[in-house]
Image (cartoon, rainbow, N blue to C red; front, side, top):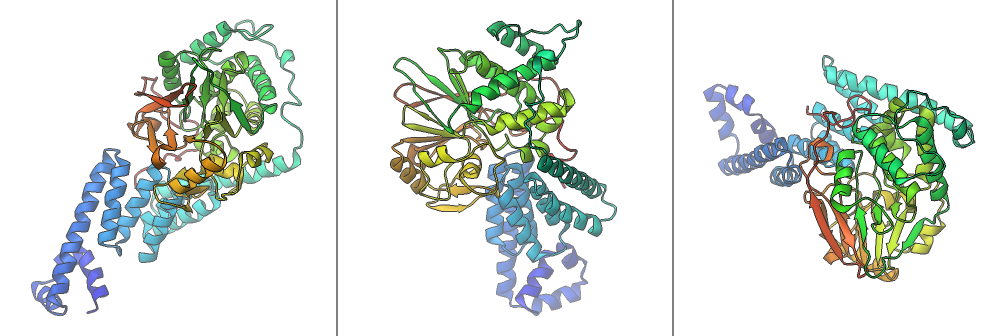
Length: 514
């Protein structure tokens, strides 16, 4: 018996145990005893890594589980289960590109491994690659005809694919802005509406009453919601791609990361740190919407403060301020459910005009994702691009919204499947060549709410604690003074009404167990 045949046989403990004693002895005698012992030791060690990783996974300690699955793979690289399990951990950490790679490696070892098809399909769906996901879920349904979960995924993907084709056709025909047909003043406010009213100009009283209304699970009248969109969009259109902000002596600027529709955690930031005002300015660094089920309340609150104090609250674009992500992760469905599709189309255009980055005192560079595939990109190059687009799979806008830091030198393919990974040498060189000293970005959940990397030159800030009600992480924000030295504040998740994350997303988008 070849070593490979023996490994395959031994990896199935049920087959080994079912053999009659005489055949078991004969099999053992057909291979070198040393090979048997070495394989048994390696197999036991790999299995122990997997068991411990599964336990960590069950307790939502996904980063630690990922490391142990990797140890299991390194110990027994021919076992497809370990790769498939690691793919699931990558999905939980939103490393969808790496999840696809692990699932594909698992399928090379076992081309009919149903769970690997399911993992790859889930990762493709999360990336908005509906057709690839559909092919994988159809394979699962073929291999397991009685699997209701797989059949549900097939129907979901087919529905999304039809809707995408329909909307693409409409978008190609439509050239006018949704704002062109909007006459806010002609919208009537019903007599029984008991919420805040925006008369001649927006006031702080209006914003605070709107927030209280949201806390009571009530809607702002669509007239005033549209008015906020119109005023904010006009403000954003006039801005450069890179905003140059100053923090004077004696002042501070607060920088927040992803808020992802976690309205009650946003309010906790304001409770701890004060509401936006001329003496208390903020930057919110993208990903205001999706995932959390109060995305509309989050973005309306931020835009209302922006309308009131345009120089005191600044918003950059994240990868979730895009059509593809809004469709998959809930914001599109939420706006349609709470108002209408036309309002969602107004949000789509508003997101186009969000600035791509901010500099503080010419020292700190703030963007949602990270740096670039190309070393030659400069601040001037960022300012030249047309930002009023849906970002593709490459280019300056894509990299700013999607890239992530890595500890290794140089660059690598993105763990997400879009953007790139960049190392400490890339960060150091880019900052030096653009006369900057620090990169602040968001885009990644961090257990402590923030992480400092690249010899102190790269900070990740994340402001959505207990992300998606399941990660158990802290949130954080940064305060910068004139010296541009970061000072961190951490906070735990605030209580909120019983509503699950992604309530308005297509059914089944939350990655489940299988």
